[in-house]
Image (tube, rainbow, N blue to C red; front, side):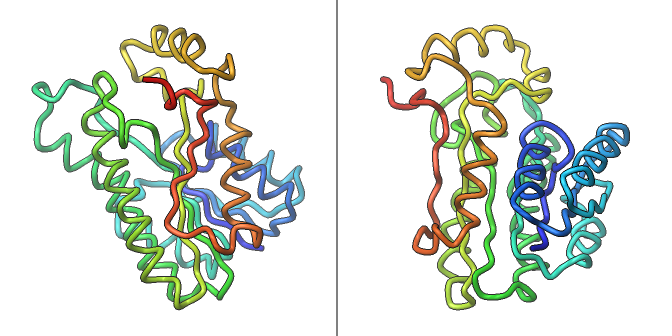
Length: 240
């Protein structure tokens, strides 16, 4: 099994990569933005888990990076986990912030699908990692939330278009996960505290739990799950 994970060297992406390595993947292609040390550490962990790591550095919104990622295919599983964005209130954003955020989080997913799907075999799977901000209004999250809503819409469209090829397309939407990504939020401590207090399960979601959901959607057990967004949030989004 050959797997591509964008944003695959830290946090949730690293957990996803290691899950697939543990499940028997022979090669893990890991896209990452700029943290070379984290990338090398992730590659070592993947190697120790028994898979061959391939690192591709750069912004996944770049045509060059997408082409380089796709060149390592064909893939059995493609996971678009890479995410970025400007964390500001709506009236403090600029058009360049919109372009940056939507390009990396949503348009890049479509670019990846165009580049990889033609070579993917029947039974393959594409999974996008979304967040609760796609449907809920979170503080300072207008750009990222909108990009995730677009991402989930793309999942539905691609699920229908790629079904005749035997390729499944789904998404996993995670609740609050305490990773380095939270450092970009000015209200990080509040988010963590309220996330724990509000979640019926009584704790935050762990990266490995998101990875398990991704692995399920990529498995044969999810053959008839198409265009679905699987929420993994411990019940957080159930409360009014």
